[in-house]
Length: 84
Image 1 (cartoon, rainbow, N blue to C red):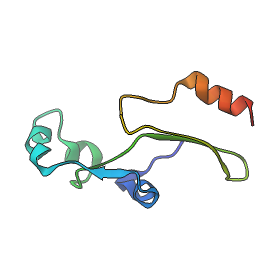
Image 2: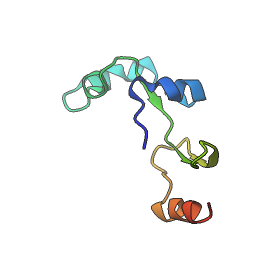
Image 3: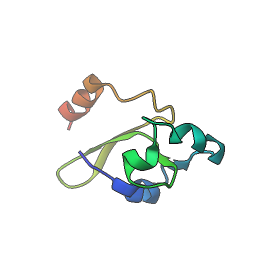
């Protein structure tokens, strides 16, 4: 599990996208203030990605989906692990 505060690694991997500025007013409403929630006002979000990394720090599998609503199923992750 990795936390990437400020999207530093995500930016290095090229998986960060900047949201259109015309959406800013929507995210300033109570309960949706991204600056308050994430601690910065970059208006950038990482593309959700799952990496399986072995003990030698080699990436063995990747699931990257531009649609943030689609995530790797836990069963698939377990299959990846079982095949290591």
